[in-house]
Image (cartoon, rainbow, N blue to C red; front, side, top):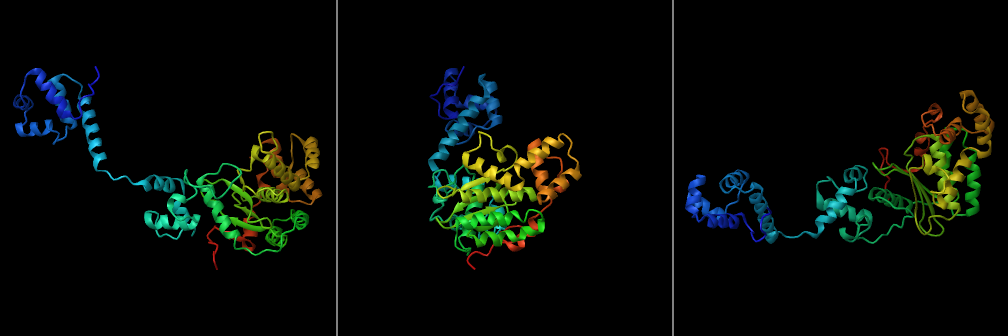
Length: 380
C-alpha cells in the first residue's frame, strides 16, 4: 500500500498512527524507550527521523521503514529550498569547468590564471580568452551566441583550440594573398615531398602566397588535425595540430587545407577537420562535398592516384619493401607517402610503419607555433 500524500513530515505520519491506535505520545515514547520530550520533538518536526528510528517505528507500527525515510528526505529538501539562494552562474560554471580542459589551458599559457580551483580568476581569464563581456556570453555555453561559425558540429575543446588559432593568426604578417600564388605554392610544395628535412620550407612558401600558417598542439580530446578559415576575404588561415607526427599525415592534412583555400571554403564557416584518417579521409558518399574534394586533392598530392592504382594492381597482395622504395624513387617522393596511401587502400594501418617518419621537429623551428613546451607570445 502506498503512503497517503497528505503527510508532509514523518511527525504527521507518526501522529496519525498514534491516534489510530488510541495511544498518547507518552505511550509511544515508553514503547520505543525514549523520553517524552524527544518524542514530542520528532512529532513536531524539530528532530529528524534517522535510519535507526525508522526501523524502530517500522517494528512498532508494522509499516515500511522507507515511508518514514522518504518523508524525512522530502521534508528536508523542502526546508532547504526555502532558505536556498539560487546561483544562476552555477550551471554555467558546471558547463565551463566540465567541458573545457582548464588545467591544460592554464599550463599552455592560454589562460592567465594561477590555479584551476581559483574560480573567479579562471572565469575572468575565460572571458578574456573568448572575448566575452560576461561568463554567460562565452561561446561554448549552450545559450550563448555563436561567434565562431564552424561548418561542422564542434566540441567545446575544439572551439577553444580554434579560438587560439584565431588569436595567433590575427597577429601574423604575410604577403598579399593571391589565388594564383597559392596554385604556384602547391607546385613548390610538391618538390619538397622527397625529403622530410625540406618540410622546414613550408611556412615560408605559404607566407609568400598570403596564407597565415599556424601550428598549435592539440588539446586532449580535441582530435583536430587542421582547420581552414578566413580573417577577411583576403586573409586565409591554415592551422594544423600535427596530432599524428608522420610524413604522410602532415602532407595529406596540409594539402587538404590548401584545397579548402583554393576553393574559397571557410569564408562563411570554418572548415574544421578532425580525424582525417581512414574513412574520413576518403571520398565516400557520406563525406560532405567540400571534404571529398579536399580529400581527393590531398591523396593525389601525396601520390598520383593513377600510378598508385597501377602499383597496387601489379604487386597485391604482397608489397615488398624494395618495391615501395623503388616506386617512391620513381615518383621522387618519400616512401612514407606511398606507405600511407597503401595503408589507406588496403585498410591495414599496422603495416609499412617503418617508412612513416616523424616530421614535426623539422618544421616547428621555422613556423609560428604554440605548444610542445612553447607559448606563442601574443601581443608582442
